[in-house]
Image 1 (cartoon, helix red, strand yellow):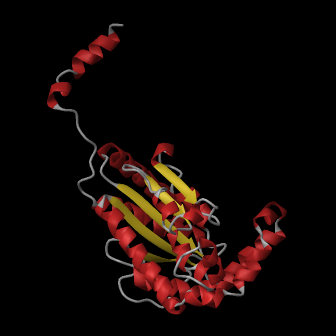
Image 2 (image 1 turned 90 degrees about the vertical axis):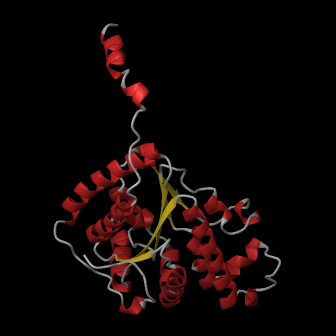
Image 3 (image 1 turned 135 degrees about the vertical axis):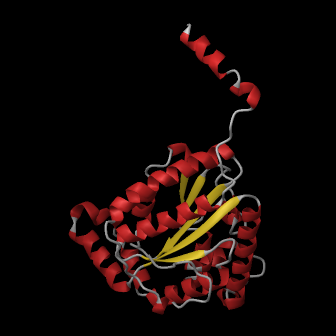
Length: 283
């Protein structure tokens, strides 16, 4: 597999959208068991958490990726949040607040299905949404210029820097889907009755804004991919391969924290193990 981490400015137009790894599904089965073991150790260790951020255009495969990559992780060890339109309560706080309170506790993996980056992606394409936030400095849509969104990206960088310093491992994945593949997936939702419920007329409206979204994604990725909180551009036209790529990066990040080890019993308790066994066997 290629290198997917963004370490230099990227162009989405020049980034591949399809890669096919042979036997990707079988390789994923083996890998997710390793992820499960590392998460168990992280839970027992109790000093780190992991935040996985998933972004991508409609139909890029976020939901199925979460299901397939984390299906072997203990249910107590992974928490998934899918962020929708902000609620009335959420709009009364700053734009990062609802994401901050959803962060995973130490020992757990948190998956954000759509993330705090929606606030510099969807709202940048639809700046009228910002008006609902009642920000003192924003008097009209005209105030939502590049400087406004770049300021938000600076805030995101500080947010991620803060949580990393406090033990959260941050990985951010952009599922890079081609426009042609999205068309096929949308048609599939219409062709298969069992999939009809997944289709929304809004998907077609957003599809017409494809180029605007690509520009916003590229700008956000280039401004916020940092060594402590990197972005990965994942070719998403082939779902099994995309899942394997994400799983591999997750496992590598967990494995790289060599201090994550399951704690051992203090010597005074280890000396009692045989006595405790005897007590239970003698019941």
